[in-house]
Length: 178
Image (cartoon, rainbow, N blue to C red):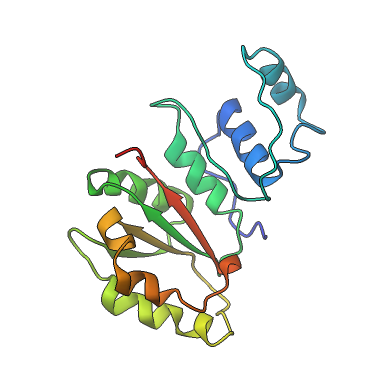
């Protein structure tokens, strides 16, 4: 996993830094914490148990207004630029996701599944051809797919990803309780 994205234009809060650290390295995330993060963690009312998650997998579970969207976009940008990020969400919050992505990756390619600008049926096949042929492109810009739950569960959408190795796809689900 690369770090080709420049640092965020706004600072992460301590709880966001800890969440991303735990998500990226669940086995050793507590080791070598910066002093401010170690103190922040020590002052918390609950202690989080280590998990058996693989690196770069897991759930960012944070309260409303705590910056989950920004933390998730920041975390997703730790992947190499040729990793496709699919974000499934209610369409009512798509603009929020797009704004956070544009802050982090102003030149990102965004494909839409569902709602205004729905273009996945024409755009995704073009972008995924190299991945299916076993030669993922060297991406100049990061690809995000912002889609509704109806779009991501569409059989045609799912089939587009057949034969693409999982190391080239990351999925984020927002408002999954809906």
